[in-house]
Amino acid sequence: MTFQDLNLHRNILQVLEEEKYTNPTPIQEQAIPIILEEHDLVGCAQTGTGKTGAFAIPILNYLHPIVGSKNKRKVIRTLVLAPTRELAHQIQDSFATYGKYMNTKSMVIYGGVSQVPQVQQLKDGVDILIATPGRFLDLNKQGFLDMDHLHHLVIDEADQMLDMGFINDVKKIIKILPDNRQTLLFSATMPVAIRELADQFLKKPKYVAVAPVSSTAERVNQKAYMVQKEDKRKLLIHLIEEENINNVLVFVRTKHSADNVVKALKAKNISAEAIHGNKSQNNRIKVLDGFKSQEISVLVATDIAARGIDIDLLPYVINFDLPNIPETYVHRIGRTGRAGNEGLAISFCSKDELPFWKDIEKLTRQQIKVVKDNPYPYREFTEDELKNKETDTRGKKNPVKQKQNHAPKAAKTDTSNSRKSDGAKKNKKRWY
Image (tube, rainbow, N blue to C red; front, side, top):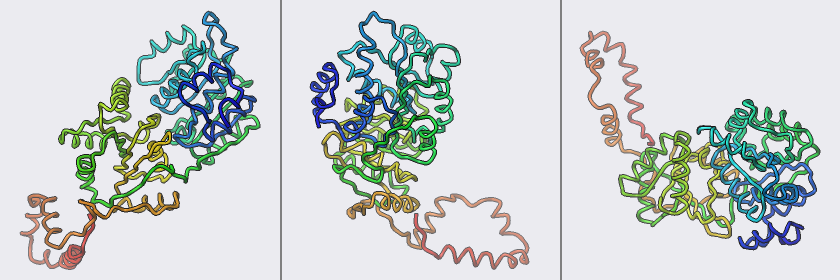
């Protein structure tokens, strides 16, 4: 099937031809005809499958004759709910691209920034509104949103909405929207709560599913390093310098870890920046633009902040910290090996992350290659190294303990059993 077979407006087909999009992706091939027929839809598709185009293209096709000329008054006809501001911007970019030769106008609203310019844009009129749930409810409560003309509601990344605690806000939003709307729900996974949401608010929806979450991109080469936890930064620097890895997205578990990794990289004169929830919106946009233009070599991100990062030519993904949810691993590595390009996903696994790694291999049904030529492998400390390590960790002796050493002899005798037990523990080898 080609896009020509989908009976789309010539203005959209012209853009698709210019962008060199000839054949729809599987999710687009299944979803677009259903949306054009104005059925409600539940789509299960992971990152990188062309999901945004699957709903943006048919929505624009519907809106084009309604919107008409530039002089026609603009009202909100489509609402897209997204969990993060980055994803919201990505969605707007897609609408702007596909609607290049149309008179549709789209905008993004999200929290964490002044609402004044957003309110002014809304007053000027807009056809397609992309919003994060909190800011939408905020501006609606203040009376700045008129949803009486709404035809399409899109709930994107529904599972991420659930993970981030937005699902109740989504339910509140759905309840205040007109009933005579078309609702499209997209999610990478289908937990029970998302199925219940679909059953409650969608009318006889059609279901489509592609690239199940257990699958990993065919063009992504995967490998893992079993590494001492404290050596992860050294290994990252080693790979960047020795393997000449550039333009790499590095996933970490926490904001604090992201900042520390960036600090270590910059100390080695490696161009790196972090993106996470504590960064301002202007900073996040600047960093993303710098990474996309390859002015920034390494982007260190938490999972939530990375939602919405869409780069077709991203060659490398590194899991500095393994995710404790195996599906998240699939989403992470799916950001490389896109648009027909090869990709490499590297994972660092410390001893305490072994259960996570086993869950990942179980989900993906793969035994991922473990690199043997590793400069920082797991190892057991010898007894002398263990004693030195514990001494270094403790530093000087605790004054309180010194005082206890001068206690009466009877007190020493009373604690002899526990000391024997402690000594026995110290004689055991430990993993670090």
